[in-house]
Image (cartoon, rainbow, N blue to C red; front, top):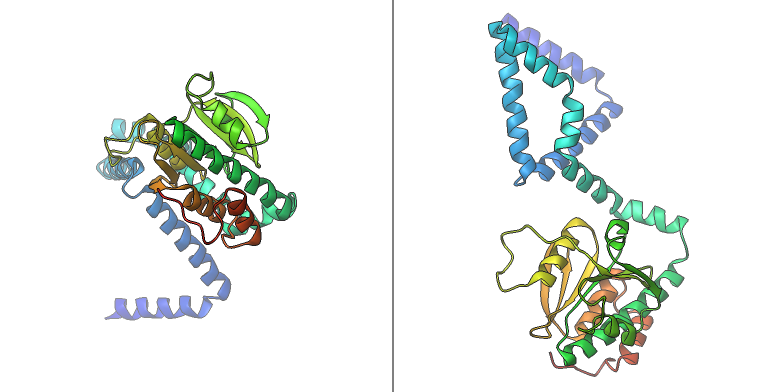
Length: 294
């Protein structure tokens, strides 16, 4: 009973000393721990965490049992734990930092420090119009395409694998690049800040086992690119002419030109029903009241 009373008194003393700053401290740590658990759950990192926990348990056992050799080895190993964790969890740490960078608060701060939103949206809409027009041409010719819209995640490593273009995104130019006899058709095109930045780029393939076996290399590259960044990736199938879009590791299929234009406007600009968006649809012959067959 005395021990219970002492424990209760200790809890009361801690409660009296608990301030708003302490509550904020606990809340931040809780959110961080939840984020770490969510990040490593159901991934390769989850297995690594289990291995690290096993090593820590073995270290405690060796220390308790006075196993000098084993304890000495594990002590040296755990002294370098920080560097080891950074190396082992490099992909997960990078993904977490990218997610922080993609948050709306960080993006709004970055955009306020950059160029004006109106100018950025105008250039993006021109690129959308060019891509939608090009997909229509390529569908008719049964030629494939793989087009990446860069967003917050910079794709310098991907761009360096291709050929720099730096040109306006007209539909004719995009279609010409993906013409099956053109030198740059076999690869991805990256559109940065409303301009064709590079073509013939090598994109990472998805390693997911959930991807349908009927999907070819282009679609797997589109999914892989969207898994490794926040990019929006448009794919035109060479076999069927079907238009697909990959975002966040998910592939949506069966787009037509109108639904493609509307979805790109929503994802890249964020204002689907704006007058400028209707202007894009009008220039493409897809204004309100007009329908297009898939």
